Image (cartoon, helix red, strand yellow):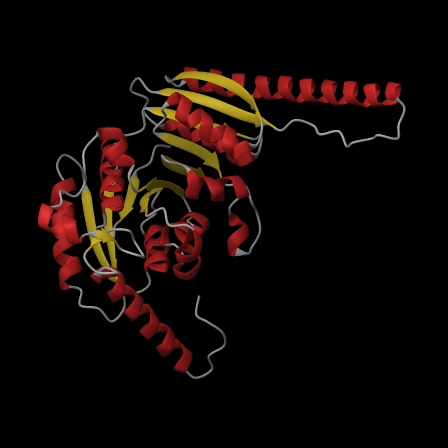
Length: 191
Length: 150
């Protein structure tokens, strides 16, 4: 049995761009269908995610069967549910390579997916592309480069302490936890 | 840029056998696989109060055990390499001595591999124990793509 359904969950970060190319190549070689999935954090406007998803699907498309999906909610649980529903054989997911405190506090979507996935998981760390192919993923303009520094959470380049996408996600997660805590009959934190 | 140079870490568990089985199913277009099993050397406790002859005997037994472990490991990686060669990969088996993860990562660097394939080891219901310690640490520390096979 060769992989016939390959899932590429993406948050549109540079790390996941590399994972996307690997997923596309593996799907092409195996003649498999490529599923591109983006999970919008709860209580967030999904239009930006939808645009990005369409763009990524266009970039990866060509010569393979593809399916794009936009879901809303918690990333890890939605990815796992999608994998079960669509009988995915292989998940290719990018990791930001966070360790230490930020890893402990925020957890890791990729880590949860690896542990609980019903199938094979290929994790692709950030920075693999620069080393392997000798090209930068994000061409940064000089003016922006002066202001640029790594985001504290996802280490994407940003001109503030925590990038907009991470702020949005953290806000959404806190809101979600608050809502869950106020639910009647609540015991402990939601899984 | 799919998988061309791959290091497969073996430990004799069913999951690592599945890792080899998975590699045979991929379409190998001129790819190279290195099967690595890392053997941890026996450690003999310090026994300063025993007579020298007995200490020498203990050390000799530990050496014999090490040799037996290495021989068994070599048979296993050779078997895995033979399986992968039949599937069309250029494969070879290696036995390394040391701590599992550092030895595997050293091999990844030495081979300039673009992926490390490992079996997920742990069993059990608790989330954290669904992954073995080597697989878990590899996810964080490996500079290349990591495939976890279960």
